Image (tube, rainbow, N blue to C red; front, side, top):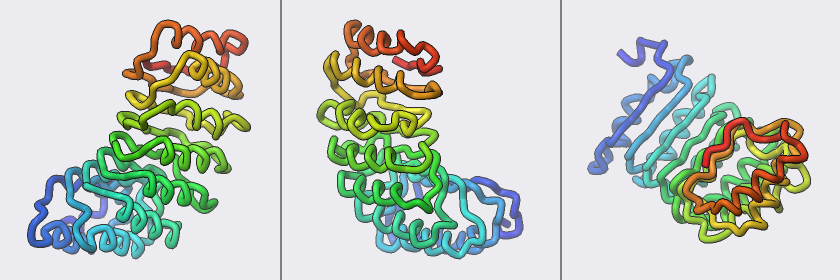
Length: 254
């Protein structure tokens, strides 16, 4: 039925068992659907064990045979680590036409080495990505985030959204962020989610605010909740926009 119906735009696979290659069998059964459905724009996987042998390789092999790319891939809580990221993004670089514009890899096991792989992917001029979400990957440290920030700052076009919320980076996230985007703040993603991800002093919040105030156009949204921001930190951040009020983010979520 799925192969006949070519109007399905989103397919979600959820909680398929780990044993006896059940996930591999399920993806293999869906292979004709993946290849023939030109309308498929979004693939979602939730709570899948994608560390099983050949799962990622099988998925990217099938996607590479498609004539049209999917626009969005969400692999959430799928036990994806640095090795799986390498396989996935290497395939996207090898076949640029299958690379999605939106990649969500929340609640996985990605570390700094995986971030390095992601940064190399972002640096590829053929990659047209708009959204990157790495929320709740607790193995990423400031080093990993620095790799990604530098790659984003060097792109030709800014990301529409970056989500690195709920990551225990273990330090002041604002410092590598400011260092990466200081030469061109307009390359900062239009929407930025730093919820529960950084601890910073008042001076860092002031410098961060001044950086955002230098943008030609205001950000659509910036989310800074659960970062233990004091009223002094907040005052330092907001005051930075006094000289250029039009650059104040449209949505400031604290």
